[in-house]
Amino acid sequence: MSMNKRGMDTHLILWTFYLVLCILIFVWLTVYTNSEINGISSDQEASAKQIGLTLDAIYAANGDLDLTYFLNEPFIIKSEEGFLTVKKNEFSNLDFYIASQSKEHMNFEVTSDKLNINYKNGGLSVS
Image (cartoon, rainbow, N blue to C red):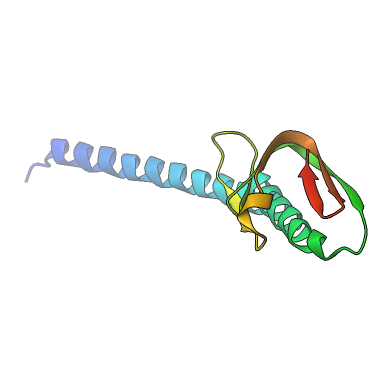
């Protein structure tokens, strides 16, 4: 009996392709998981929650407040109609916090690594 060498080459090429594909998927999943756990996403989520909770709680203050947040890196912080969004850049994923205060008091957009929140005489300003 003679061996069909073309069939063996096809199987070898197919298995090599599968192996390379599996390695690429594994590397991509490892990098993605690492960036989700330790990277920008966790900073964005923590910043969105922290700033959102501060903006919600600031109306309960008895006096005037002047708060300054120093962030690790510049972020785009935007509040529009009760949704507070924190992004690393224009193309990154959003992390958001739903603010419970009235919508007309919470409209602002800041791109900086520093966030100033002032609450004086019942008025809120963010810069």
